[in-house]
Length: 321
Ligand SMILES: Cc1cc2nc3c(=O)[nH]c(=O)nc-3n(C[C@H](O)[C@H](O)[C@H](O)COP(=O)(O)O)c2cc1C
Image 1 (cartoon, rainbow, N blue to C red):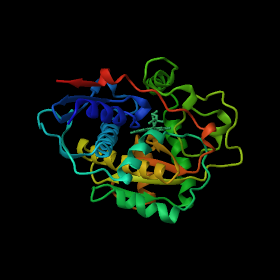
Image 2: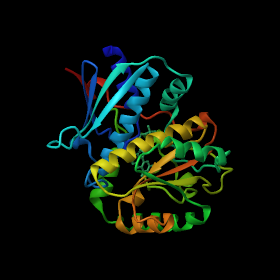
Image 3: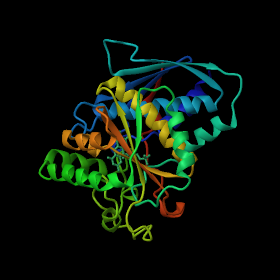
């Protein structure tokens, strides 16, 4: 497989979402093989002490890589955690030229570029009865549970969301870290002001991580309160392996939602505290570990949503050997 194809596909993989846009991945390419490593220096430790969310983010990037390579006509053979002595080595993927590329594969790769984390209040998703089975089918046989919460769950989640934030009120390490990742700097990481929402907009989203607010004019004012559908992805265990599997599943959910014309916002603040994880478990009725939540809905017109967030330069995360 040509190096240029690998460069293009890793570039698309790096459009994956990650906690605070920390991009905790490093790639090494050699012939037709790409290795994915967790970069421990990019873990946002105050929110993600164990690195669980960093591994999950890498799982999304790994799935994005395979989507991009499939759109380039390549088939993949994946080995996860190939080195038991180095758990930061998350995967090795060997690519072979395939027979053909379908339109569906091209569309999925296009969805990578259209997807973004949108923190605005959403109107209820349209055509949900058709969308939900697609999201479920995309998970394949992965050991990741998808629960779609009912509207009745929203007040419980809103309370859990508030509880999480109040537990953190005096956690200066957490707030210093959050400020650092949302500080407007030119380097290609962190969350820029253009991707944050104003105080008025934030007041209308009951279930969301509290970020510093931006000075935007009020967008989507006709949505008085967020009406998004809230999804939960859970796994039986809380291990690096289950976080990686969950990342693969999250990629699938986000790309399917984008393809269906829906906006999405990944949320994990509720999974960072045992008490709010308990509240989520109460809503899903599962004894599983809730890894991540996703708000899905209808966003305001594209000219009102945030531009794409920046990324680190490809040459800083991809090495050819
Ligand atoms: C594991 C993980 C956790 C995240 N947690 C949150 C969150 O709690 N709240 C939020 O608004 N965005 C969250 N995000 C979204 C990231 O902030 C976002 O992906 C990043 O800023 C890059 O922006 P983009 O997704 O628009 O490309 C999370 C993403 C991932 C993958």
